[in-house]
Length: 424
Image (cartoon, rainbow, N blue to C red; front, top):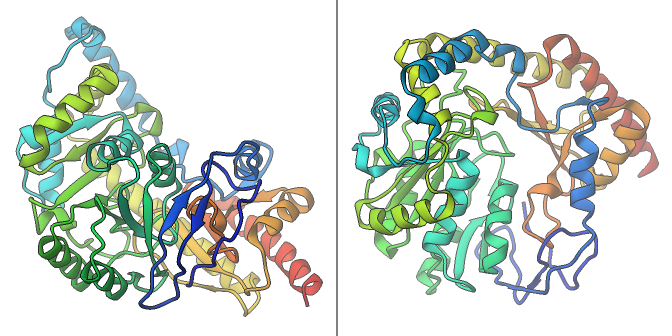
């Protein structure tokens, strides 16, 4: 992929608009972005409102399957917490046993950590926001991929950083040659953000060689890495690789969450932080929310006490893997040969690259209006004001029940064929 140059603010772009002072190509160059004043009236917000319509057959949002929530286990856990510890509903700052469970869970991913290195958060989004505010001074540099999780952009915008945006591909991920070149040229981002497994939106997982090389760059140039690993436990084709945090505990901040594997509304996530940053992060965390998600944390901990998590994860992997394969077969049978996609081995998403003449935002409008089906267009994952991945679409395969997947892909195929005919 290569990044287009943004010459002027556009009213349809959400949040701050970034004006480019240099350009980026697929290799070797970078762009630095200067923030323009925030603008109102975002087509991106309109798009999110559109895909939230409950009347649609939707592959848009990164949601788990509600029919797989272990509701009876949650109910029993919540009752036990209330019966045995009413103080779980009070103001309090105590780690409880959840951190010990997280130590074991992280050990299963190859990460050794202490309880005092674990910070419980209100989901992964708060974790991202906390680390952005911990590491990034207003107007300083940061580095991330040209196509990445939109929640990062939301966390960054208030601080208006100079964004160094590296090319990425659905095959290999972030272009580390470009990253190394920019660091050699003197770029010093406050951090490098990456999603190592089940990339949102690309679905890819970084190779072991790429993980090692990125850590070597972080050490060599003294730049922290923020590793977002909320999908790392949803692996479908054998054991997943260990996170980068397993390879380095000095330069890697790790973000995890129960939102994708238990339930989003529990809002329980965590950060594993390097020792040098623990005092500052502890202050920032307490100042942000007074550590007030204790009831949810105690309930999750009680659920984990029952030993039900391994069987639950096995169920998710089996069911989501089946849905992934069902969607891949539907794409193979319905989509025109001009579209391209890869099989993700982890996460919740399949990324489809359409012919360059297709604008996926316009395609979304057509799909909603004519076939009542939705997806997330690639432009949602561009930097504010950017238009990369305009011909890409992200499809979620975990939320939609299996009997609807084939029909939904067939609907999308009909829309795409009409759009291709219209665009020559």
